[in-house]
Image (cartoon, rainbow, N blue to C red):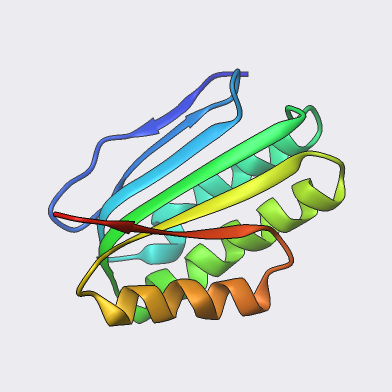
Length: 126
C-alpha cells in the first residue's frame, strides 16, 4: 500500500497519510471547488487501510477554515475512522485549534459528539 499525499493549495488542505505508521495529517484551508471529489481518494485510502490497519491510528487535524461542504466530507472521513476504531485499531483524533478561534473549537466539539472515537482538543498558539 502506498502512502497518500496531497499538496495543499490556497483552497485545499495538505493531506498526508503514512500507512506504515498509521498517521494521518490534514492541515490548512478546506474550501475546494468540489469537496466530495477532493476527499474521495482519502476515504478510499482509509477503506484500503481498514483491512490492514495499524494497532494505533493517529489523526492530526489542523484546519484554519473549512466550508459547509467540506464539513460533510470531513465527517465522512471521521466515520471511516470510527469503523477502523471499531475494527480494533486505537484511533485518536487530535483536533487543533487556535486559542482565539471559538468556531474551530466548537466544530471539533460537534464532531466529537457525533463520532465514537477518542478526540483530543489541542490548543495551538500561533
